[in-house]
Length: 371
Image (tube, rainbow, N blue to C red):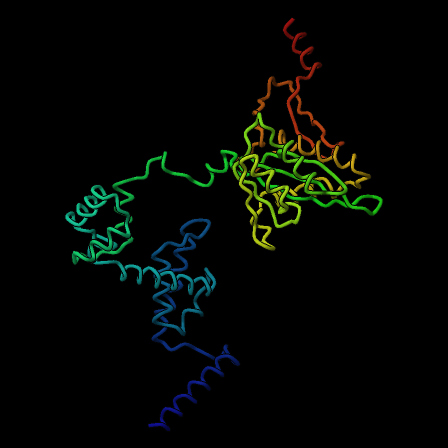
């Protein structure tokens, strides 16, 4: 039996080798002529259908079946598409067949719905006691009702939606200007020295609240800047986020914040992402301003940061604010067809904002046409 299998394998290998080395000597057996003629007629019908061959689902099915049952003949007669295309058709057909086999027999899909009595019991417990999903789930288990806590939570959300006045989303909390942040920005000068800029920014609208520069920062100086940033006639934030700088953590600064009813919030050690809003603004200042200028001195840096803060608050759009500026920038529509677009420079032309202006020449031309 083994010798017969070996002889059969050797004969098949020799047959394939002869077919590869001398294909002109190979003649298909007469029983395959009908199959080859059928495949050629099918391709001819596809090509004659229109100027551009249109392959329909039945044509794809024909070649998939032809490849499946006659793997040694389909490559010889295939002309209208590539062999990889037929293989892809076969994979798609397998995917469709198994998708149909995997369908549930019943029309209803998913888990069975909870009984009406169980749903009514959950609603009753929530109404009479004000319990949450965890407490109700524990009580149901003691009653011998086998239901998951997730199902209880879904029923409570569907039957008892949380009112809007009880929701305290983080975004609404930030919009109330309840949180601000501060950080130092270190800037090298032309004389190889360093200046320190104190930046205070609100989380709600990304508004720059205060900027000032000094060469020798101290706790007393920072306390004075906090008093200037949050005077008594303006509302102060409830929380102020800062890093573990020794000046920010000093007793004088902390007492100043508490005297202004501001709760200091110190971030963890080496975790700048916890003060992400202020760190992002510091990076923006470096990329959009400080990387393009050489600071000459304290007065120069104070003027640059003041101008950039005004541009940042009034003109620069932000993705977080739905493409608006921190102080709000009105949409300016084109006043007339003759209006032209002008660029208003900021910081000596480093940045611009654009606006519509009426063209005097265009207005004179319109008046002449009307006359």
